[in-house]
Length: 302
Image 1 (tube, rainbow, N blue to C red):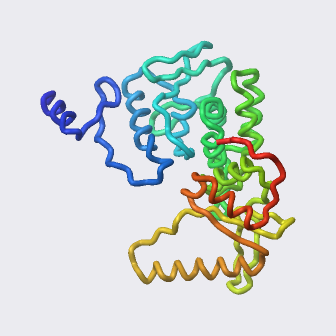
Image 2 (cartoon, rainbow, N blue to C red; image 1 turned 135 degrees about the vertical axis):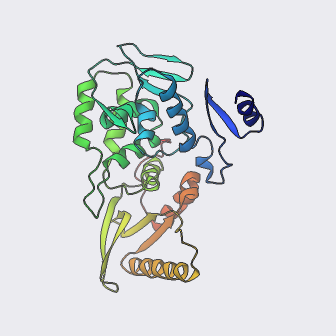
Image 3 (tube, helix red, strand yellow; image 1 turned 60 degrees about the vertical axis):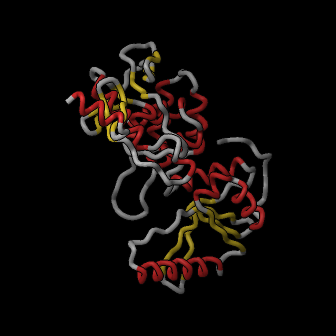
């Protein structure tokens, strides 16, 4: 058995996660550049390996966020984040233990103990770049437009937990996230785009602006709208189809008709995708062409 394990590792079929813990080697990724460095699946495997090798670990920060299914923009870390048993934090073997300076309520995901959503997100704000922490926080706050699903938390609960924990190191990083967080972002791409609009110095848009499209007897919701100049924009990933060419054509035609109906109600309208948001400059040029005013000096945010 041990010989077979060593042979599988030698062939590259298995990769070690931690001492005594192996997993199937991941397939090469062909995704966007921003997803290549450290994928969600990689990180989940690392977190689960720590769950099997540590005694009663309590996950927090990035590690609890990934177990909760929350997204980030950027690469997942090498380190696994645990709640320390006492008031002192430490780092060892790529495991970061976060100091327990106040009582911390716990939850559970798939049999693994985690800190509450609120504590998790505040720790993530301390450890992650602003764009990553804001993406996870927006996702936790999101209120679906249709259906009865409840958000994982609210901005009020996050602020209460923030005040309860103060003072704590890097709390200003949490302030930066809480000041920008919203329940209106429907995708990580929208969150990243909103932060990019701020970074580039453009005026703050209205989010999820509603338009009535009489041609179709339905509503459209614009991701971003600037009423002072009468223009709007959307941040959309590429439409995915099920392989049926007739459905693909119908979806393209329906989306084009919707876009044309939206354009008829605005002075200007544009849209961008993931790669353009990551590159930043294409979005900047689109906003300039739309006539969105620059109201502040550009500032690096992510």
